[in-house]
Image 1 (cartoon, helix red, strand yellow):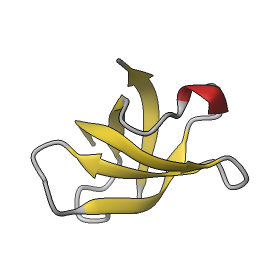
Image 2 (tube, one colour):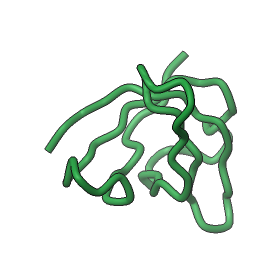
Image 3 (cartoon, helix red, strand yellow):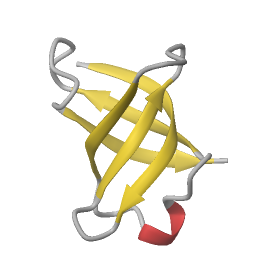
Image 4 (cartoon, one colour):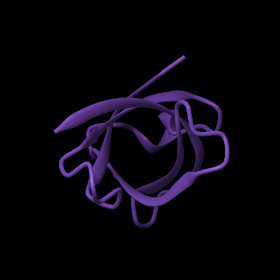
Length: 70
């Protein structure tokens, strides 16, 4: 398991998934990243920083946004 920082680039409140740019990676954005349901949809604003947990470092789709902050 690995914890990484990122930036929210987009959010779909219907699926509760986000597009996230992982810190240190300027050209790679992860799409369809699950967002913890305890985070209000109103907090998922593009440009906000976030904390990501990767359960399997070899599979970027096996990640979840667990916090957002400014």
